[in-house]
Length: 192
Image (tube, rainbow, N blue to C red):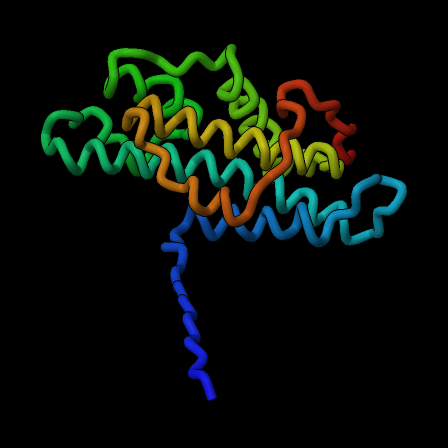
């Protein structure tokens, strides 16, 4: 009887998860597995879940921004004391408008995508969380997540260089469809 050679190769691997990747994976799961394709398919719980995606999307942008700033300030002690002194008590809007120029010599262009959508998302997130309880549609949720990922890439590349975005393996494993920019999406009326 002839011997049979069995060749089997097994590879293992894992994603190194952190605040950005875990937040993305959770929002991605909601968008791809929980939220229906169309508004007419929505149930009562899909509205609040859409709000959660919008809030998580904005959180991705903040995580990325402050993560990049921390890498730069920690790697260059005493060089960015103006940022270090205000790190704990500054508003995200003010930091986004001022700190990139302090770090790189160039401001973020908040009039161009994807940072234009990041700024619109910041404003809508604030309207959702504070004061007005702004509502979120399925389209807004999907657009927010797509725009936040693209803004995260732009922020990290602006502050840390071309290799600054370290989550391509996460996006490869959990791909996201291209959506309309958040700055172009139709916002639904706020709750009164």
